[in-house]
Image (cartoon, rainbow, N blue to C red; front, side):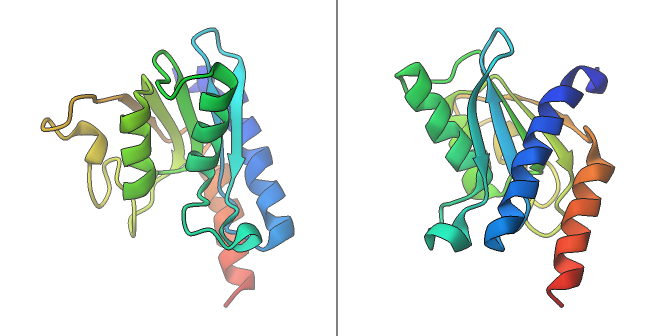
Length: 151
């Protein structure tokens, strides 16, 4: 089943690589509509735009909502290169995406199973399906290279 998501993850990885041009952490995301078409793209823009909410997932979710003309992203899938943080996991829940597909786990800030599990909290009114580990090594190599060059 993870192979089904590899093309979308490759698009997210392209977004992540583009973040390198602005010295942002290379994380990328795409949002697919129910038919599998990309309706939102995002990359980290925190440095480029001096925006603490400029995470790839938030950028992609905003673009997808704009493209669809509504904030509810029912039937959509968020594909992201790194496990979402609490802000991004919360945004995905609030946007009502059907599923979150991610590459690498984030033991330091992950909120989709690592450090926290926001998206599966039974107290919330929406719980998206989660698929982890899609092209995880590709995501990890990109992130490791970025952080190695910044130490």
